[in-house]
Image 1 (cartoon, each protein chain N blue to C red):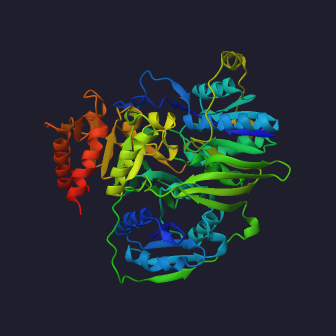
Image 2: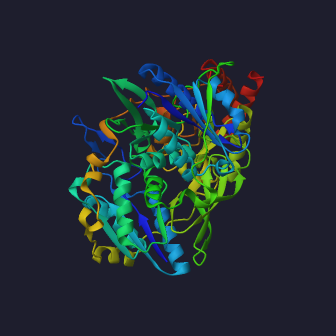
Image 3: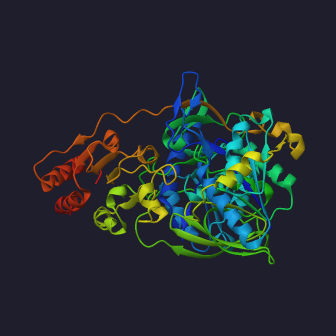
Length: 265
Length: 328
């Protein structure tokens, strides 16, 4: 079985984000990490590989920083890693990114399952997975919290998807695109041997030509969305009004009155 | 091209999802400004037509109705295919979709089919110098971004749940209903819904107007019991910090924060939550925040409106009692 995992790098979730006057976004001295949601898809791909045999290829569209995500996936145990980049890709929205990823998946070829995180913690569009599935004409199985069954002979997969009202059980034909959410597994820590393997690995960079992509369909020219302004939201004002009273009961009474006065109950 | 706006009306078992009416409300404002009509798109299985009247009441001028077995359960392929065709023949300026789980799938799938842009999770939509600008949170709300779709049409937007006001329904409003046929036959659809396990009771975090949330301070699974009792009284959803979820005290469905859900209820009661940056990012847009924590130095007090420095196991039951006496 061949699984392709799409990943990207993001600033750490603990990072304090800021924007300077020129509109440049900074994450201070926080590290760049693999998008946390993607760790679940890498882990799930490795578990499936170990159960059914085969290999796991990770791909990422991005400049050199994208290596952080690929290295992490390799340190976890992925077999191959490919970075896709061309300067023309800068400014790609999800329409363009899903095009590049779809062309990459097709160029990798011979794929049974494509996996990705259900969203990324930076731009949080939640779009790329389902957009990719649409481009590849594969079933889209986003928010997967459990792979209930995988039948390679029949070419079928059954998953549980986490929706607002509960879990939807969906069967789909393979190849399919699975978007993972937290709760599906516990991503492994990278081992010393894994990190050493990742450091020694070669990371080929594929260009648009390598994947047969039309340069007009990537970057700003291939995108529908522009994002000219990024700003820091207004801070919530001031400190909390600390409710002071002799007893907890009195504090609770005062708080209850305040909340009723706020008309939020 | 028309100046009309399509809005997808999401339903689950023939009950409309409230956030869809918020999207209809957002569309109403924009349509009035750009001189177009609001066209509600209602897709479902048998009996879905019961929602037509509601769609008009909430502000639709016209309803496109597709009732077919293949559309009974939400599946992104037949839904996106049908909407793409309807867009192709009607040529609306915009498509609005509530950013629920299903909506977040439908928006991009539709946009790819139409080779257009989709802006996700908008919290504000407003014209600036003739350009429709969409404001949306990024990095879990640590930053905001203003986006636009200058060239391609239709513009597709998903609207963040609870970011736009739900209009007051106006009984007796009426309009034209146009029936649509599905464009995919069952055998062309690659996914089959085999079942649905509804989560056990409880109010869902995304559309809750009150959330009672517990963190490390609840100290174990049973620590959520008093919080649940307060939540039951207030018809509130139960939330949790990452620390509590990672400790296995409560399922992931309840996690609030950058790697959980981003919420903006009217009232957020944080119990025993210190206020890690990734948690604060997920709830900072709540209207009123109450923090209950033993540690007066906890960062959560910097963001809260009201704070009680005491043991949550004393405060929460006392608050429940005080509120119970006042609200019925």
